[in-house]
Image (cartoon, rainbow, N blue to C red; front, side):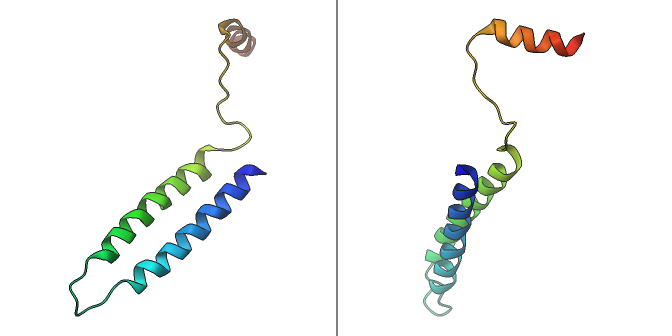
Length: 78
């Protein structure tokens, strides 16, 4: 549930900042503010892609006990 909410918030932020980037572009002024907004959008897009590709129900869970890891891997090997 939290993953879905985080992804929706990220997509909403990307969409909003896309409009901001387009609004900050003015052909005659020579302003480069739209480049700064576009850079932020690119970072967010790659973060979103990473989130979608690698966070799901089987994502990494930290287990500091090495015996648990050994039991899991030895059970798969037999």
